[in-house]
Length: 269
Image (cartoon, rainbow, N blue to C red; front, side, top):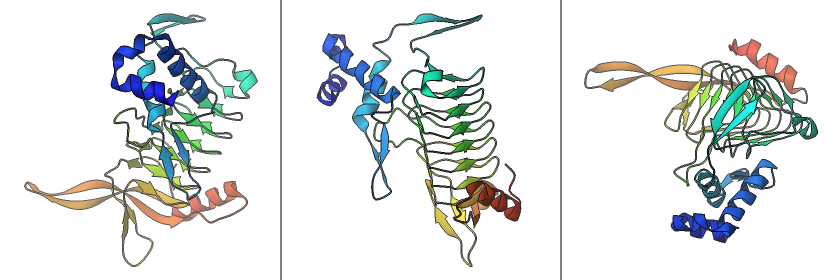
């Protein structure tokens, strides 16, 4: 499959061939079932992006035709089918939650009225809360809580770009935005309204000197919105950043640990 997809990527005329169409559709089916992933964790704790899988997702769009989808009184007009058979998958889906076919949603996931896009991976025990969105190819770990209105960015191109990764046990507070391939480490806590892009400064202020990160929130960090002063030709202005103000303690009772962290640091979620 990989060879066929790589060739079609270089020569789009091959998209007309039955074997190319079959290969792309097979990849999307395996993404939907969680057999293959756009990105996967390695033993050393880093993540590997499978560009050829992302290529299959991108090329799935041109081989699909627009069609009308009717769900009760609701009507949609799109190229992508919706995910089905939630009961057999063990997923709780509250109206009006939607996941596209080609997104993996594991058993035990709860989808409040929310949206999960093609290529995404949402692992077991995760709550996708009201009006939260999980963008294309985003990777969400086990027992994650995406609070109300959270925006997890999607990425299809450029191919080498990593998707947003939210690791196991993380808590993403209300109205947070995480985009551009930012990775949030295991059991980290983002307070309400934290915005993380690839260029956002993530500053650990728990020690005597600030320690700066970009594109990665370390495991068990407690993070709140902040700002710093930056000089421009027109003057000095405040620029948004994120502040690591503490650590979520390692504990067997993660829920208690989370509540303690929020109370201790007075973090809004």
